[in-house]
Structures are given as structure tokens and as C-alpha cells.
Length: 102
Image 1 (cartoon, rainbow, N blue to C red):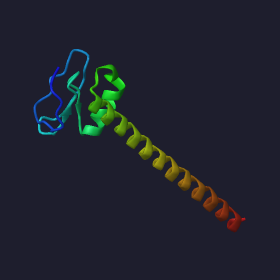
Image 2: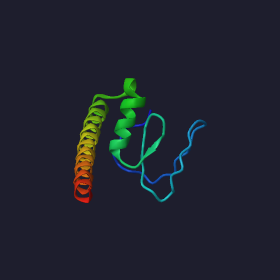
Image 3: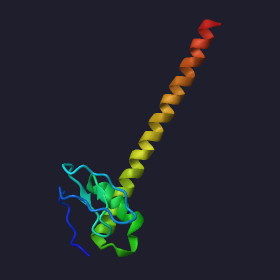
Image 4: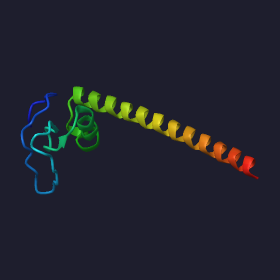
């Protein structure tokens, strides 16, 4: 097992037999210590930890995974509210246009 680091690395990623990663060599990535999967930032790696390596995590990694999950849920909820707002405005806008045309 590798040590935990939050520093991005530019080292090329060696794909395993079941992995299909195509990361350009000049892109900075954050690598999962458990399986070697590359991620663009720490939040995506933390989400991966919580989903794929939950039983192997340290307390700090588990907390990072939980924080990333909560942040992702908040972002998704905000997107859902914005999408609902757009649909409501579109619906009433089209209804008003229909009333003006007929």
C-alpha cells in the first residue's frame, strides 16, 4: 500500500489488466493509492475511495470521502432546482405565448 498524498502527480499511469485509462502524459492527475486509477482532482478520488475501497480507508480518507459525497449531493440538488426553475419558466412562457397567439 502506498502512502497517502494530496499532491498531484505528472507520472504516467500504468493501466492494469482490467483498466482502460487514457490520460495524456502532460495532464496532472491524482492517483488512487489502492488501485492506481487516475483522477483530475482530490474530490473525484475521494468519491472513488468511498465507492470502491470503503473497507480499506483510514479515518482521514473516510472523512474526505464523506465530505466529497456531501458536496456532490449539494451540487446535484442545486442543479435539480435550477433545472426545475427553467422548466417552470419555459412552461409558463409557452403558455403565455399560446394565449397571445390564439
